[in-house]
Image (cartoon, rainbow, N blue to C red; front, side):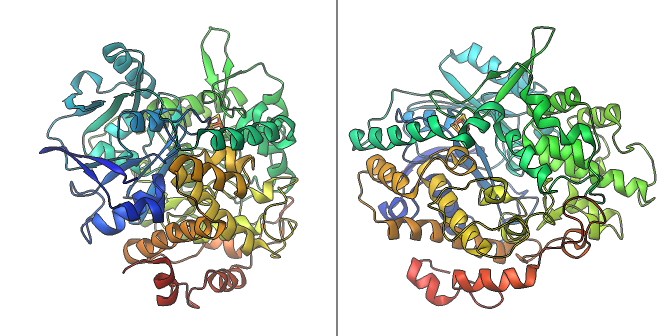
Length: 597
Ligand code: SF4
């Protein structure tokens, strides 16, 4: 079936269109169609912060059916942080509502003269004034739009951080699920689009309901007996803290020390002991978001792995309650926690070294960090350096590039690549900038990865089989995102085998695919994203890590004395992809994949 797009021009009106059927055949939907649209329809050299830049939301063919773990969406744009494609992945139910309203893809272009929000109710599509929503946080915005349009309304929005154009503002779905990593929230703020609210229709019946139900049943039964799913089902991604500490992947003070504080080292056990309630997506057998009830009757989110590692280890905040509060403030203000903690840790080190003039952010100062986060969400007369993000901040503080935690302009996640070889390669090569969540590469943090991964698992510092396994993750993640099946269930939890994914796609689209077809779809999406990065990324798409994390071993801790052998890994990575020795996709590969340059 041809993919249905709704294009909103914030200055002119809207239009409906169907994409050529070959787009769904070759890219499925979701992330795949976003990559295709940006490559083929974004005017060449459009600056990220220009009205012509496209902000594209898409859901895969599974979204809107009754399948569990299929309600999320992907948002993509030309990222102001990197110049390359920037994605945000969010779970929840908004993607399902988009498809139930009759659209696979929502394309937003232009810049509204005043703040607006978009309301979609099937054929009824309206831009409305968002003046009364301005300044509201993401939870309050979702509640206000539900009150106005009814309880079945599902909302995505930016918070005050996006309104004040903090570089690493994020979009939040339903006041609960953040689209990560950063980039798209800033573009949404630039366009003066506060929110998109959808009143969806009824469930979509897939072409082969029985086959879909059978595949989902197998997944559900696997989840029921999987120790990994049980761990995630207890704490979400914070489950991985135990293994991350064990291999030395949590380092302190912006990665300058491997000497980990005890409270952070035992944070997993401490959070596990607290009472919690789940806020996982409807019907999901592996809920992975949790809240901690507070004495006041309110609740705080259980911080994700990235929050504990980022604000806890990287910035030095030891109080677990403060970490939970930081997770909540980031969610409500619409700030990406990885990029926020990276910028703060980097500023702390610049101040410590005397590269920044003031000493307002000492390591581990909770009050200073909480205050600075509130300030990031308030429009300043003079732009706050911290709001620029690490990529730009390193240009301000001369001599800081070696320890600026960024790759291609995107903030590095707070797991130290000197502890995990495959993870280091994943950061260096991701075309969206350095983030392991591009490939959802959790392989080295899992005690018993599933047998369907290629080759044997190897210990974290080994180079053996790391390249083959990373490439497998890249392609599998791209297909999950194209199909609209949750990447946390499929890869963080490893609960979906390739055979099951194939059956699910066939059932949802009605088109029979082979395993080879599915692998080629994944490769096609990844290749297109790489081409985009090589053409448009601010650093030319170079695959590298900052000096600290590539050539300076830690003096202490479990990862002491090691740096990842990137040149060796990159040579194998390019060869296995069938690219040139310097990493360009070759004419033969492009012809094989049907990509035109
Ligand atoms: S695994 Fe987590 S994010 Fe994915 S559908 Fe389940 S609860 Fe939602």
